[in-house]
Image (cartoon, rainbow, N blue to C red):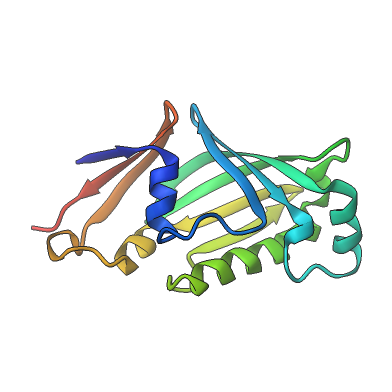
Length: 167
């Protein structure tokens, strides 16, 4: 069964109605691309060079593409743009603080730890989202408990999820 919904509705459900983390100033799905803005100055835990870089770049514009979905995990590829600074070259400075801030935000909202992992490889930011684990942790009605996410797509400004419902 395919379930399709706009990004803002799914974010509302996933974040339990509490809105985006304070460092994410906007997020929208345009076609198959998630466009978000992150004010890196608001990331907690910045030290030294990362704090200086955050002041220099301010708000970072992110283009996030779904690179794939397998074994319950959505793999995202992130392209970053910030003023005239090539933000992808600063990825290593912000990877740790962004990973920690996302994890803290989710656990503060009652979700289990480890649902997201922010990484960096060769200057490219990646995010792994444990979609199946998030669904398993959700307070679902009894008839939906045990549902399996088989696939995930971003298209036409909608998030589409293929689910197998329990017998």
